[in-house]
Length: 208
Image (cartoon, rainbow, N blue to C red; front, side):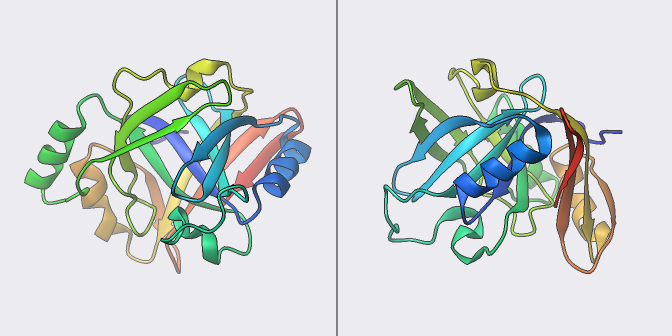
């Protein structure tokens, strides 16, 4: 049973080798992720799988054509040795208002950042987001504005069966989740982690 309140936008599955991870998911799920695009200046590129509606799985890894950026790549990609479900995002319609409300409730999601990338067809996608929470358990916020959502481009799709998380002190993050109107099924784990179960042509696959 899925246990969030706000609209799930996407899951972020970070990897040190995008091509190898996309191929492994294709073998496991029977569906190949579509090419997303490059993130100029960040040294990354992504591929996408639809999860139903306006939700998707972002598989993100280094972009060899960009070379190593001046700053570390996002999502800890430079230090990864295997793919990891690092964080997730919820979609909001008025990012500034949601940030302000969360701060009033005692949680600061951070300031909004402007982002963009081009699709393989040359379409420019622009959006605003907050930076990911260090634990990955609390989702970051994303506002696509007038841009067409990536999941509306006819992505190959799988089913998201469940999404949950673990934390050494679950109660310590439940207040942050509540401040942005998100409820996630959490249990006690030795370290923060997210777990998603996807179902494709060959049955269920667990991402952690």
